[in-house]
Amino acid sequence: MAVGMQRVQKEFVLKNLLENGISLSAHLGDRRTEAKLVDYDRNSLVLETAQPSAFRGKNSVNIYFSMGGHMMTFKSRVKSIDDGNVIVLNPEFIYRRLERAYERITPDDDVAVRVFLSGDALQLDFPESKEFDPVDDSIRLGVQFDPERIASLMKSFRERASSIAAESKIVMFRSRRPSGLPEELIASTGKILILPIETTRALAGNAITERVLTEEEIMAAQADAGHEVFLAAARLQDENLRIERSEITAELYCPVLFRNYAVGYIYLLQGRTGKPFTPATVDFVRQFSRVLAYALNANGYFEGSTRPRARDADLIDISASGVLFAIREVQGRVHEYDELELSIDFPGRSIKTRGRVMRMYASDDATYVGMQFTSMDHDDAHFLMIRLYGENYTGSIDVTAAGDSARNEGHG
Image (tube, rainbow, N blue to C red; front, side, top):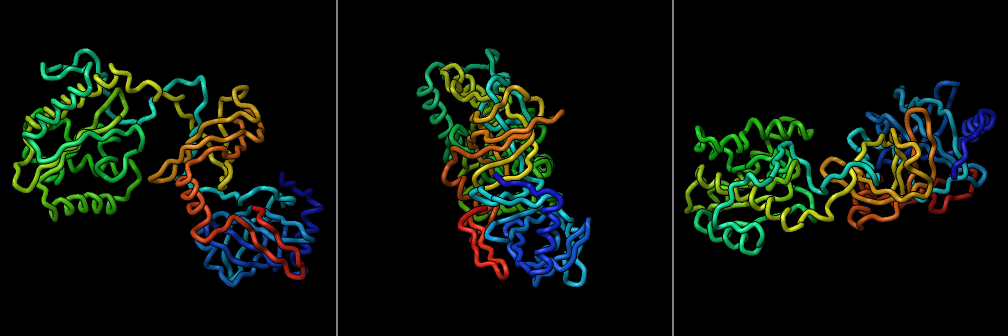
């Protein structure tokens, strides 16, 4: 475990860095650059570097160096860049005896952590939607639908769909999450999407149009997801152009809602020689989606898909091997060496993993938890490495101090 130096020890280290011109390795996200300490006072450190531009636009920086055969580090914040020198805050602590496998990274503001604790209220392991559908016995069941027999239900759907569309399929979100604009939109809004968007105007005046996404609703949904207005418009235009350049007249995506979860969707494709989708077609797909959700529940499809409701945590730092976060109102419920499930949410991708609590500290308003990952999908682990450290990072911190032949072997 890293050890924080006392004030006198820290002053000794800073003096040696200054007088001996010891090389520092400055880590700014996935960027690395060398620097030297050329001046300092109680509030600031002045760093000389050949690449001051690497610090521009950065808030935090991790500094690593070798002294007397020991790797040391401190975390600081960039204050300003002046005449090619970079001024950073004088850190409260400098740490020695690093034993972590990977460097810890202060995450961007758009990275979040959610923790799942046993005993909390349960939720389904499907994407949550803004729409809520009770999916109860009030569903209008047609004589051609037998909710107790999924196979016959699917057969009747394919027969009906073949008469109104060139292609049809049912996609479930049980083993994967929504990807691409159409899936993202129907999952988050719980409404039907018809592309190209211009074809929705033909449905104007029909009651079913309340269930169909308008262009304004699409733009609003993308804004809620954090997309800038120009990017949102470009994404929608790309979908319209994709259809325009293909042998497709129209596509229809209808979410299958169970309570407030999008558990999948129904997809219809109309070929170039087919007619645009009518209000009757949209109504049929909508009603079938409700029958399908009812039948899935009646046949136990959602059993085993429940999990504790996620608790939001404050992410402090993260590495390829673990994470440090603060979580509120859990004192007495989380203990050292407990194994917890958590979700690390990046823009456009969530990583589900498990970890073991290796250290804890409880304050008046929060519990600080340091976890070591114990289980993570290979593709997720690869994504995490690249997202934190960049394409060429090996997991080691390789720094040779001036006049110090000691090199660190794979510690971060």
